[in-house]
Figure 1 (cartoon, rainbow, N blue to C red):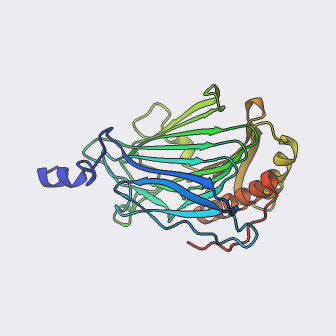
Figure 2: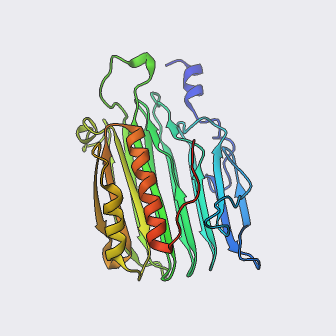
Length: 298
């Protein structure tokens, strides 16, 4: 690779990071005196951009919705992005991404990193609805998702990823990303661990790519409600899975009745998106009794 091509493969944000070495987006939501949730604090660095919080849902006018955007065109070599969502007591906030995120090829080496943190105080409710990560050939991505939900609070968090072959490489018919590391940490409001797991796949890893070859899309939906009723939550999510014969899924209660996780496999991105949408809507209704009143189209 030439020096010019090597320089082009490095993230344009490499010189724009904060003092801690990360490109950050931080949001703190709080309940206002009129009952609506407001954005109390924010801090956004390149490549992030946000809309103003909106109160769009007629079935839940207190809910604040914020769309998180990126101006960079995806994740590049040496990117280190961190998204932190904090929801205060009695507040209700939904943060969603504008679209899927490309994880670009990294033939020259290097890795991109993405950290997602969600913390919800007692009586609060949070949704973080992430569109899929698109893993290009030779891409490398380390992700960490850290969730903390206090008793009496609730949260719904979605994650998804799929592998992609660009038009110029259509002769390839198998996943070709180099590394995809997924770390999940769920703790209680005292910092004690409830769940800690890591999934690893990619051409450069011992796990390889075998479980991606038949199912090109994978997703997880976390519905957290420490101390809540798990049986009706599990029932609602299993019912939401019914009728989606092109998606395979399983619903499992988390340790300590902290919540429920649904793991999903599919061969088609559109089918997966429909199921993830059905699951987060079912989670919201089961957790807080609110029916989604919007028709989303991205």
